[in-house]
Length: 158
Image (cartoon, rainbow, N blue to C red; front, top):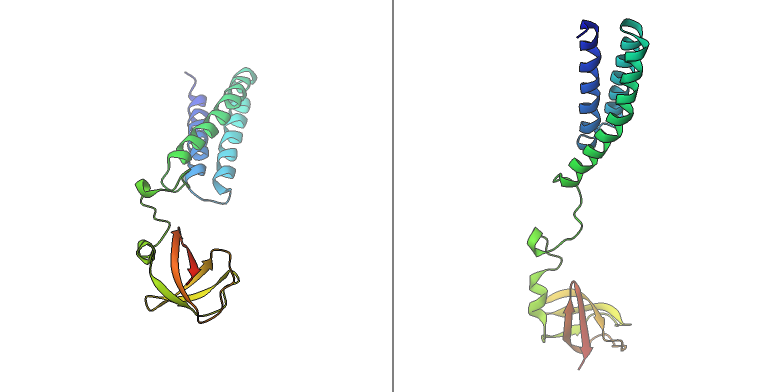
């Protein structure tokens, strides 16, 4: 093997590694510029110190290596713990509502504002944003919690 090919091959490997790391490390494009510089100098070195034919082989390899390394980078980021998940659920440790809200079912309270249909109410000595079942309920009226859906507390007048 020609000793003038060692540096370009190392630069090609560095370029591929830097492209893949660009997907995992936030760099505002600096790693991409570094990869482009490594590929460009590698090709320049081959054309100027080895031969035109070898340079063409390196360009053909880059046409395959660069998209392949982008695909590998995308696959890595998809499995990375920093990416957003497709679903959020209890099995992933995500709880979308306060479990104490379920305890309000059937409890009585008093409206602190007019419910048109949304407003504030005092239930169990605590203030909550509530929604009526669709009826207008005046301030100071007694209410009962009809349903709790997520963080939405639905009440009806008594």
